[in-house]
Length: 217
Image (cartoon, rainbow, N blue to C red; front, side, top):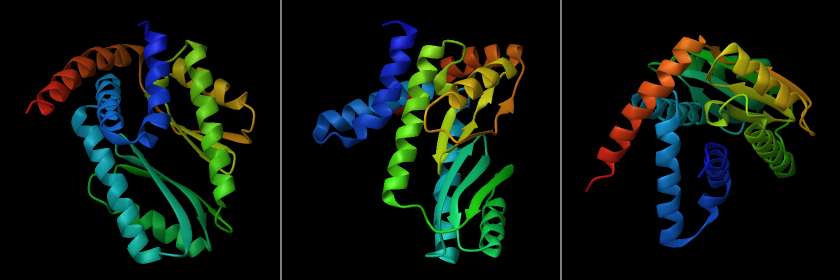
């Protein structure tokens, strides 16, 4: 399978496979996740830590600010995007402070909007917009879509990931020209082309090895 086809299949799997029922869905999802993990520029340890940070952020904010807003948390390389809607500026600030105090968090992008929580229809539209950006990213050919995290809130697209400036520019252009996108907010961590090549080589080999070992009985 060509690289572009593989990436497209993996991105499709992220959206479709979790909805499948039974053993096939579980196995297929596991395989897709394993491959995506191996292709990620973050180390396996950092990916695991990012997942833990997202879980802790959701749990701690919910404990303190439940029913005072709609919150989403996305951690990439220990830097956390907080998106959604809250009832006041004080709640916005408090949510940011809670997340900033989580161990190993290196930075917080507090993009919470003060206003009523989005409806299920709004969130469905945002998910569709995200899927369109991801789909068009595959066809772009100037960057690996697996290195770009896309989050959409109220038509605003946030872009995160470890990318070169050229990759960032290409991803931003794709998002800006996608129907339904009102605004693009790039939150990338910019790395040099040399560093990108190093990560693509070393992380791929290391993560594949770790993923294989973790899958052994």
